[in-house]
Amino acid sequence: MMSLRFHFYILVLHACIIIQTQCLDNICLPNEEADLFNCGDSILDVGNNICLPKEHVALFIFGDSILDVGNNNYINTSIADLQANVSPYGKSFFRFPTGRFSDGWLIPDFIAEYANLELIPPYLHPGYNRYIDGANFASGGAGALDETRQGQVIDLNTQLNYFKNMETLLRQKIGEKEAKGMLFKAVYLFSVGNNDYNILFSTNSSVLQSYSREEYVNMVIGNLATVIKVITITVLIELVADLRDA
Image 1 (cartoon, helix red, strand yellow):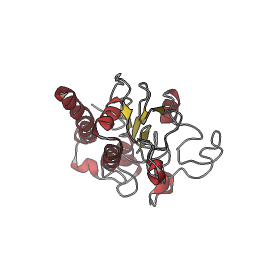
Image 2 (tube, one colour; image 1 turned 45 degrees about the vertical axis):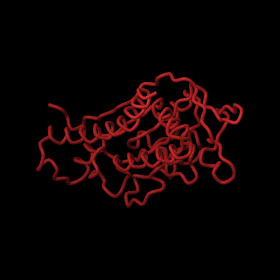
Image 3 (cartoon, rainbow, N blue to C red; image 1 turned 90 degrees about the horizontal axis):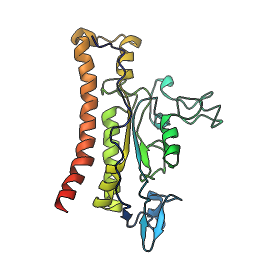
Image 4 (cartoon, helix red, strand yellow; image 1 turned 45 degrees about the horizontal axis):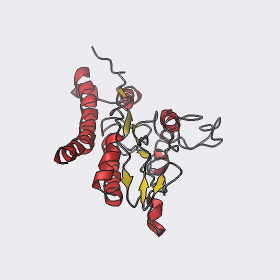
């Protein structure tokens, strides 16, 4: 029998695949639009085009407090434990609380460093638009189910909607082909599901009066699988179709 403490953890959704360097027109835009991508040292200036190195891979992050680098700092929640913007969080590395549920780096920070990316801030951080490096949508306390701490956290489906909004902006600013190529090469990191089970023991939940344990576990896994399928269809199938048409 599957345990209610089952923690559904997906480390990498898409393997990185090698695609030749894609020249991205108008990534660094003039005047006020330039801030949308905030190009740094990882970008190559080739003639009138701006090109990403072929080894550049973006990182997109979904989940709970294991991966949340501060999104909960920017939401209204009445549960104080769902925000890590107080001491001693961050004390041993950043020297101040960043919103990470840790005294230092989290898993996505180490991955970003290994991939030669800047540390990826929370998606809700005002002014952050460097989506060519990726985005972090994770929210401490969130679960795979919308009902887990509903209204107090950024649930997984809302994180998916944030991803779709970011994808639309990318397509508008760098073009359909370039955006699809970048998203296809990207790594997708998930850590979610633990809170769906913890909340059954930390509250007076009556969920198990309506569902068996197996049914509840299947609901959690099913909702996560649906989100993964949406991302896969959005990113993978459209690019494959383009390659077939080429």
